[in-house]
Image (cartoon, rainbow, N blue to C red; front, side, top):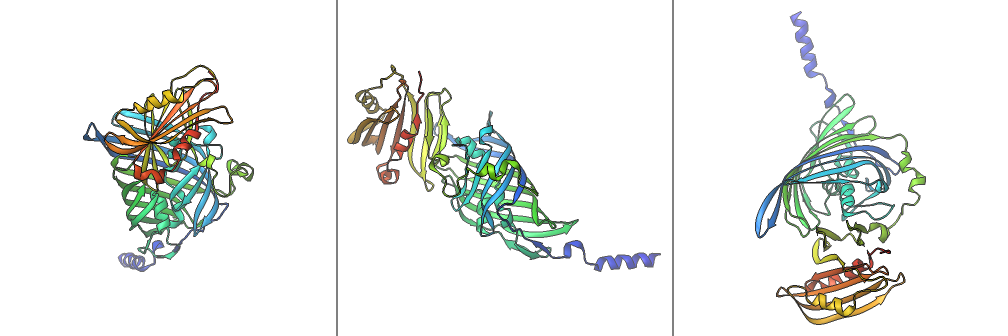
Amino acid sequence: MLRAAATLALLAAFAPSASAQPVNLAEAPAAGDAFRYSVELDLAGKLHVVHDGMKESLKLEAKARHLFTERTLAVDAGLPTRSARHYDDAVASVVVDAEKMGRALPDNRRLVVALRTAEGPFCFAPAGPLTRDELDLVTEHFNPQCLAGLLPGKAVNAGDTWPVSPEAAQAACLFDALIKHSLAGKFTASADGSATFTIEGTAEGIENGGKVTLTVTATGTFDIATKRVVALVWKQKDDREQGPVAPASNVEVTVTVKREALAEVPKELADAVLATVPKGAVPAELSALRHDDPKARYTLTYPRDWHVTGQTEQHLILRLLDKGEFVAQATVMPWAQVEQGKHTSADDFKKAASATPGWTAARVLEDAEGTDAAGRWAYRYVAEGKLDGAAAVQSFQLVAGPSGHQAAVLCALKPERAKAFGTRDRDLLNGLLVPAKK
């Protein structure tokens, strides 16, 4: 009996195990592929800000849940580049210090098209412009377009390693630009029709003009029969430097992804639903973002290279980034309402602009007013001078509707940024709408 047991043990020791067999860890994404996703995020760490000249570290916590179906529309170099998504649920809650904020995707923005570009993820809604919060909600969750690129794309044995492609690394890390990375995959084991792999390493990149360094430890599950990644737990330590539109932070993030391949395209992403989705370049009216004043005093539609950095009851603060570089700051504000059919005179507005604290105009660059086809009156005054003792260019713009509602836009920049800025303040003025009725 003992001899038989010893013989069985010896045979087991030399018998090939399931994980010793090579496994073809490869996906072949194709247009028409459809999946269902669950993506959940937990984040905890510190936000580093400067308040009254003093540095402060604020406790930061966040949770998010995204449930959506996705249909691949285009593939390039082995990775999806264009996908349509329908969100059944997309919510996030953020707690900074003791202040809690929530985000949710409205019903009329649940259809979203996601592009994977060399400049980072780009999402838009065919129904119309998203708000900045809505854009962040659908852009800043884990991007499943990277999943095939996390694999070696060939047969491997347990213990084999491979480098993650730069395209997949950039997409997985949500970078606008990838500086460098050392992310590498490793096949660890296979059993019961599934293979397990890990992704580890560091990545450095740029997001919204700030440098980000990530340390990643992830574990994925690959279904051998369907040749698909079906689950991923992605953990990262995230160190962000102060950027032009966001403070510095140090956080730890855990993202849990569950993925199910669908035999048929869901009705929410059927051909008839996607018939109106633009197939080429994204039209300007869909790439633009929307801000609705909480008191309904104006609506602003603006290019997404303007970033909202602050908001009070009277002011909306935006910063313009050009390839990650800070160019100018804009302030949008409601202006005093006047009688129907009238507006503040150009001279009175110019006097108010000239009285801006710390501002001294030295040379007028533009001074013009006019009325557009919709009956809106607009005035634009641009001058070069000094702001708080430093050389600056400022543009002051006022728009008034037939109802007597008015709103103003103030832009400030350094003279050396004038060429990069061009007339982008006009984009804000053109996108500024005031109520049509009193």
